[in-house]
Image (tube, rainbow, N blue to C red; front, top):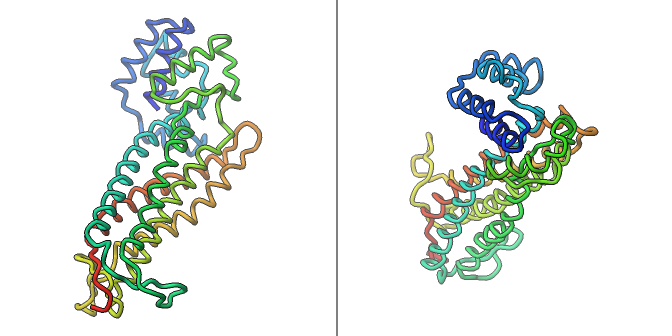
Length: 322
């Protein structure tokens, strides 16, 4: 949020909307700004969003005669949605790297164990023998497709949200397009012709992509848990969870975690689709629904990928019938 406000002042100064001295003072003040967290919490409870109280504190920190230049022409949703885009840009980089690592791990597993014969199962019944590579491909290839989809998803998430009170940037006049371009460039985001305050399809597509990733990982986890059953024994796990009552057990905790996180995200993604329904130019309720839901989905996906990496590295296929 502070990055947004600092970059906004700089962009507006470059277009002559505010004095360059004001932009310099704002940048210096925000660089050392320490918020009063108790007042911010009270502000959220009162206003439903943190920005009004944050801007009040920022203007006090900047002081006169430049206080009024802080947040000039912007609205709370610009700050909230753009700061989310900045954070998601970093989160997507982490998720992308972890997705690459899992795909690579699965490739290594296939190279090592792919020729081992396993029993295929249809409708939970033994079918005919297949190679382990067939199983592993059904885990790896969906992840590769998700990786291909990520570019388009990222492009719709890492965007600047800047529209002012109702999306028209009315206070900036003819300078609005130029300020938008400069602001987007400073924040490393994509500029849009207008803000998508009430158009949430891009962020919901990202949530759906997250659920697709965890769903594919959940399928792998379910397969591993079934194959690791004592009476099946088609995979061996080098590490697992213990039992308080049965010390001989090696519980497939990582595999179970992938199944749980897949179901968790599949449940939450419905909430994100509900959050698409905004009234008119801005919805407080739908917006809040998004805040409650999306962070959990991002964390669940990153956690699932880390867990999957560890699970694959601990998995060894055993020849059928041994």
